[in-house]
Length: 168
Image 1 (cartoon, helix red, strand yellow):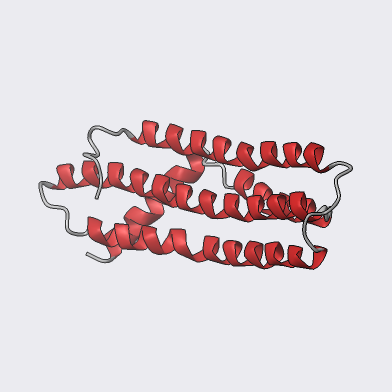
Image 2 (image 1 turned 180 degrees about the vertical axis):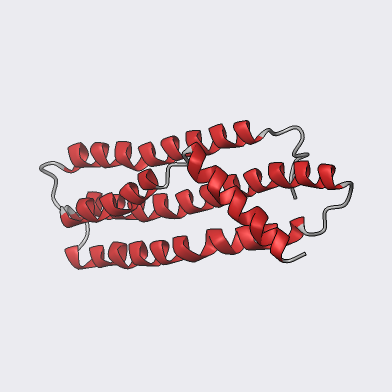
């Protein structure tokens, strides 16, 4: 399930989450800029009505973004209730594991939002419908807004630890 939490520090998990957020947010931005320049002056390759598929895909991905990362985090948090050892060992393992769960949750959420942005950009490229670029900015903004600042991550870890304590 997890690597040994003693080997992956909370600081390294935070840095990984921050790096993933930057990289996965930059990817649709870069692709969008390239699509604009490549689509300039080109005739649409598909009927513009097909571009509504992108809007539906965006709504679906955002809906999944609201649910899936939290379901995965809840399942992983429940597994932490089975940790064994001294109270100090359990606390150390739990802190490391909770940071890993945050990283996993962040990655799943970013991938769902990236997919929402990219589907709009692909359909923009094919249909030359400018509203698709505007729609792609929504998941990109959501990705940027989810940047894992240290305070945000620590607050999340504290809340999850509290939930674990309540279930004991």
